Image 1 (tube, rainbow, N blue to C red):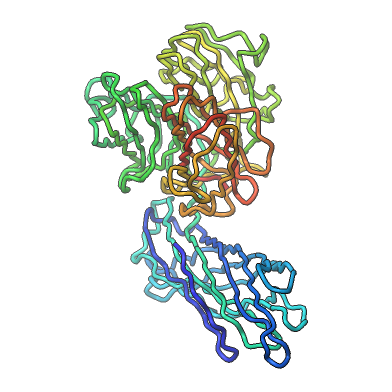
Image 2 (image 1 turned 90 degrees about the vertical axis):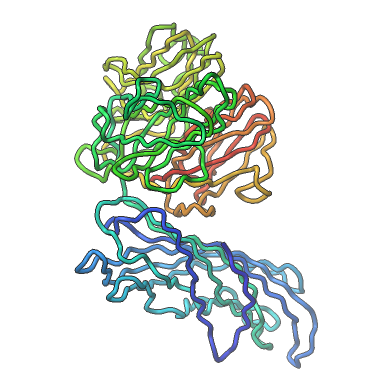
Length: 592
């Protein structure tokens, strides 16, 4: 959402432009654990005539520039009753930008300095109006003014601070999720010549505001099967999900030991389309919320396929699953997220790194292939990829390169019995990848079991360990589509990605409310290839492309895979494709 306004400065009167909020309540935050944030990208254009000291026009100029601003701050504190927020919270506004001459006799580039100002927020006694105390005060920073006639000076005159209505009454307890809002604003820049009146400025700003949700940490569990609709009818059994319908899965009521206070789950979702028919898509989301415009996985040719997913808990800890076409559904769990407590784990991102590849010569992290009906153990901390000995779980991308039919492959902690779960399946022998959070076993090792002979490639992008410096907490967000190259051309839209090319996607600039402080993202990557796709790789912007892959689509069909991707420069990620494909990226949370 954006606004474009032409602002004519009056020397004796400054305008304070208030932010117009549009609220879209998705989840209600736990205020005691939340912070507000906002981010904006603004574009300004100045047009005017250059005059001499006698007011005679001697030329025309045009300047254009972009500014990036962020606001961060705490929530007002809960008052005497749960519905009253009556204590101030402080926000800091900071930004930078640049202006460039487009036409005219001057040649300077105008670079903004770093701006910062603290603002206070308070609410009235009813707890329903959020109002800034000092709307319209100047930041007081001159961007450019060298005192030479016929050159421009730019100064921020007014700051549009948010003013809007928050829900009342406000549930305070029992939720650790987010409420998001999107707003828009313009603000005033004065373009002033020393010898001429102030000039009109066109300013276009797009703002995104939201709450930082509660910080969560991981608790691992031995992989466990929650639901299998191929079993007899029951809460965690049949029937299959009929096309166009959804099913609620009350995860805390399963036999897998998941507590009622879990705020999100680390799951592996497997579909077995009925009678080999097509499955356009399956979507999983928290019960009680509207079905989002995202997908969890697709099986256009009716193959049995799996995909990992971190799914926020909904009403009574349940999740919903919608299938566009008839399918059986299998749900396995390997962990859950709760507020920090004894024994919980933080995430530590790593540069994507190849841990093992059994296609290589025989060795600890090389060949031979995993023979059907056997397992191999891999001591991950010895791999050289940076996972320490105290890692309690690993964030992997597991790729199977079968030598034929592969009923299933299972990753599990070394030293434990083989669990009744699967990580991926490839019944037609196609190369397939799936993300997996795998608990560490004996001496940090993990085991891989293959029902049929296959090669296996494992890449790592991070690990979970006890809280310490550099550790990150997880924050759930509403499932949201960040990128879709099938859309019209744009930063987060088209065009299609050509083969052997890389694109940078600045995720915090999307409308999904991702904060600039996010250090890693929980994503679902989907490709819609024009033909066979050898592989897609994603990594943090600013780093070299790693020797790792995120997904493969050798049949040229729509394929999805989850990925935890560290944020790079300006919060961006890079995506490389070896052949031409559309790319769709959904987000369900972030680490900070």
